[in-house]
Length: 486
Length: 59
Image 1 (spheres, rainbow over the protein chains, first blue to last red):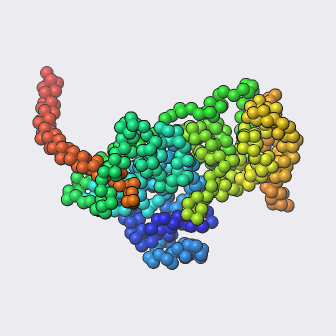
Image 2 (image 1 turned 90 degrees about the vertical axis):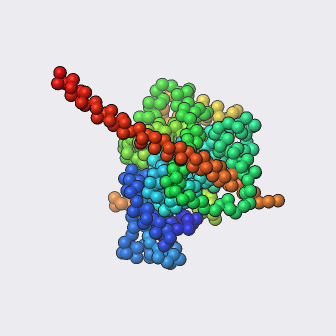
Image 3 (image 1 turned 90 degrees about the horizontal axis):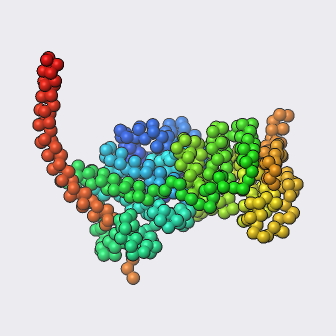
């Protein structure tokens, strides 16, 4: 499967879980020059740059057996194959909380600044150049670097950096519009003109709006923007002066980035849920004990925590040695999960994904960026669905059988799921008087529905509440285990 | 209606920043030159210092 097509220097193909990049002659020359710089080994060592190796003749010949790689390779005379370390779960900027977009921007600036000393520049500055390995950003596009004209004082990707990082972060911070809304439909970010319409007269004159939005809009209106000379390459006779200018432009961009950084400790409907719920004192310790034991028993390698809230159970799973993808539709709580995972170095990738309306496939031919479900199906050996199915049942009106069927698609082995009966106070609160719609939903119905896909391994009532926790195993897994034993 | 080029404003803004920083480059050079001129005097002060401390220790 080809997963990149916009880069003129090469294409990335996903072959049997291996990430292969076909680099054409022009790209190869830039790549080799970049790898020869003093900065490149440091980037690899600090894990800021994805691990990469050139395939030797034997490995190349083997890889060319795959039709897709061969087709791309044959279209690019003088091409070479490189292999990147696979980031366990691909995510896209419209699934990130503001904290992650901000840290991806900071990483991009690190590259731009540090490469100046090596006489290198960047071809682009897009969040699509960055992926997250757990909570850690990794720059994955090695073809973004090129030797810089020593006399050129302009940072070529300045506009793209403003559009794809600074303006979405600014609009998110000041107007509360989610990055999912902004970036799902705007692949190349926001133009200053689009943000300008949102501003009142006072805001237009205040920083950071003045330099990021108002000035560019006013200058575009007054300048002779139809003049092609505007885009000509500029060259100064003194390279030291050009580098000085570029370094200061990058510093000013970093200051702007600091100004649009998301605030810590933001509040949302769900940010205090763990502290302010109506359950008894014993409810939460019992739940935690059940989940911890389930994780200890199964030692999962890859966990999906659906409706992770502030990530309490994601942290437990990560500490038990699993690589966790934690999803929730509230960007504020997901941002908090990222802050915690990043501070504690936990292998948690928090994403803003609503399981009732998961991220669709978007981009060219709807194939550039696969949907969340396409990336998630069968990728996890344990799925946690704690305190979440009643929201899907009531607020989203998803039938129970559908929820269980999806859980069976996502996990290859275990499911830890909390059943919340209609008598539960939270369940009743969200039904808003439509309790009669759920009179048939009982513990027995729940177990029968789950029984189509899963075998119950363990069940426990949480204190005296109308909530039960289940550890289940996928039936196919049980059959496979049985067959293996035979 | 003319084709509006929305990205041009950001580019012009960057060029203005570059002009500003380009001008400060010469001030920066001047500052470095001035510091370099002052440095030898400071060095001579620091060279004198051990001599004084030596004389104190001799006492």
